[in-house]
Structure formats: C-alpha cells, structure tokens
Length: 327
Image (tube, rainbow, N blue to C red; front, side):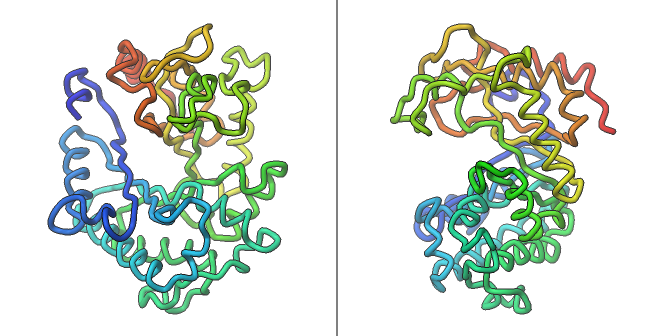
C-alpha cells in the first residue's frame, strides 16, 4: 500500500491470498477471526480499487495432496472458512473478486480416474449449505459457487484452469473445467507465470525457479516470431474464453519484471516482458475475452513495484491515459 500511494498508482484491483488451514490459517492472522479480509477490503476501497481474494486453502497440506478431500476434519474446517470468507465479503457489501483454488483443479484432473471429477471423493454434503450436492470434486466447485451466491451476492467468482491437468490436450482441460461447472462462474482466471522468466532462467531452487528442469523457453518473444510468444498464449486464452461459457478472462499473478536482452538476473531484479507486452498491446487481450490483468509476484524474491525502476508506474499511467475498449 505504501508503494502504491508513494507512486500515485491507480490500481483497479487490489489482490491478496487467503490460505492455510488450522494453526496459522488466514482466519487467525488478525482478531477477531477473519478480520484480515475486512482490512484488505477496506484498503482496496480507500484507493478506489475492487478487492480480490485468492482462496488457496486446498494446498494447506501440499498442493497435490488429494487425501485431504476424504478427511472429514480437514473438509469441515475448509467449509467453515469458506463460509466466513463469503460472509465477510457480503458484509463488505461492494463488488469483490474471488479466485477459487489455483492449481487444485489441475491436480484433481491428474489424480481423478480417467480425469473424471465425479470419480474423486470429497466431503461436500456434510456441509449444510450444500446438502444436495455430490461428494466429489464437482460438488466442491458447486458448493463454492452456491455459498458465494448465498452469502456474498455482490461477489464475482472465477475458476483458474491449469494447463498441467492435461498438458498434451488443451481441450481436455476445458472439458474438465466445464465438468466441474466453471462455466457457471463469472470469469475465468488465467495465469501467465508465478515467477519472472529470468528467475526460471537461473534455475534457482531456493526461489522455486528450477521448475521443469530447464532454463529455456520462459522469456516470450514480443515480436511473435519465435516460440514461445504472446500470440500463442493469447490463442490458448481464446480457446478458454470460447470453451468455458464465453466468460471474460482476468489474468492473475502476472510478473512485474523488466525486459532485457540478458537472460536471468538477481533477486528482485529478474527479467520479464509480460507486463510490457500486456500494457502496450491491451487490445489484443480484450480481443480474446480479456477483462483485466492483476500484476503481482508469486514469490517474494521476484521483481516488484519497488524494484522495477518505475516500469509499472510509467506503463500503467500511460495505459490508463488511453485504455483499451472492452467489446
């Protein structure tokens, strides 16, 4: 917030995670229970932004640990926190964005028999708010939507597809998201990358940048000539937009690194060019269903708005002076 104010930034969206369960979960970060959410919502409101909350509770015992779904104690605590989240958003009383469980849907698709979300058991209808829903991953998604509609009618809800759910078949990811009912939400969450490209190029395991065991292919070509490039990414997003209910797309956790011809970088100063491309080619985003972009770091050592040499301040200011039209 201090950096936003000191740089006179004008963000439309102000986003924070709500994660963990049990000791240390988001409901315990401030007192009374859950007041952290209300504090963030008030901060967003104070600068004229819409609050956005990323619910990331399913990963409390490991992102790919699906055994938690069959733990009655885990799921009971999970649903209690979801209810509190939506009740507090409802009490806030203003439009709020909710991003539901990044990565979880991909892990669920991988581990469900034949990629069928009805084949992965989960405690759902023990929750009184979802007594008529099925005890499986379809029920989880349906219950999240039902609780949001009931307790926070001014909330807008989005599900994030995961490429790794079916990495060789993008249509399979779309089919899975429709099977859980993602087309009944309000928007689709797209993630460009949770690290700067330069961090992946260094393969620094301390910062989680050794993913997939390769240092190449992370820095996209802004001229859209070589692979990977932005036209390829936007073509994929268009298939999501068209295939999942025609819902608008919000990019989330979009890196803040600065373009450079030199691979890599150092902590807080890794190279990346997504912010530059998105804010100078925004009409290309709206053309594939884009509604907005949330910029932010997915790990504490990535480039941020205090270490980017003023890039976000300059690019966002120029963009907001002549924004792209939304069809």
